[in-house]
Image (cartoon, rainbow, N blue to C red; front, side, top):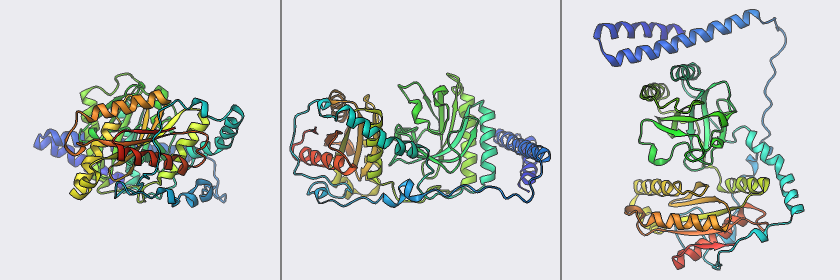
Length: 433
């Protein structure tokens, strides 16, 4: 029925465009006609395949196994309260830091790591957990989109019109860097509709959300290929184009294996028009209805990666010194301050992952040793000298270097909190080795 209605609507649009001689109507007519042709092609192909498939009457279709909730960690994601987490510094934060930490000089912690045998035990123990974490189904409840049957063929039409490799509709969480796949089209799909993945490097930064189209090169300097968790072959992708669809952080994403395959202005115009059509189809759709992902889970994720790959990592907690004043100014001021604070932290040259830890507070996972940590801190402080407004007054930074003594996420976070408490009191960044 939907195919017939869209076919009639396409014919009506063509007639109106011819009679009214309006360019907008011609664009809408071409897009809708393309969608209709794709839908009829898909329907005909399915009918052809079903006519050639042998009869399986009487044999029930296998059901997908229900995910083991305990194996996915749903029953063990509640943050644990700790006496050491209490503090008398910045109010209004879910991760208020301690103030009884001791300031320690920055030093290389390479000598403090566990020996090879213990490290191999860590890697072995966490290998299965890491593999399950990257392949598991999303642990958050999701809601199916309206007009779900149309989204797949529509994304196929987008892919054909742009000559793209993969197209998908994503919801990107600004808090946790988690991406939920609403719909996807392409041959090399690592995720299906309804699944999620974590992109440590956001596909779209807050400063880009006001633009109709954002083009990014996948070359390691602008965007790393490992951030494209929806693709099975991210190393072959050369460029992506992102168009905001509206609603809660929804984006239409297209990628290409050609170096400048999406740089044509025509491609940008088409992608923007398709995004507008999807916005009309979805309305005020919000695919994910859930509480923010526990920060303890995110820290555990980083600890697992550091152990599995034997890499150096540190957790920095960054709090806006004027946080209480900004909170008193209202929600709009908080959102603007956090957007600017996040954008600044994501501009650093040192590889890192930025996660919101609370109002005007961010956790930054810095990848590297003491030299990278010092370079990151210096770069952040230098950038803060050039900004004003809501970020005037700078930030307090407490850093904890991950080591063998950090057996749980709370151990690492508590060290970073203590360092932040000292930094807030002294006005200088503090590193806890």
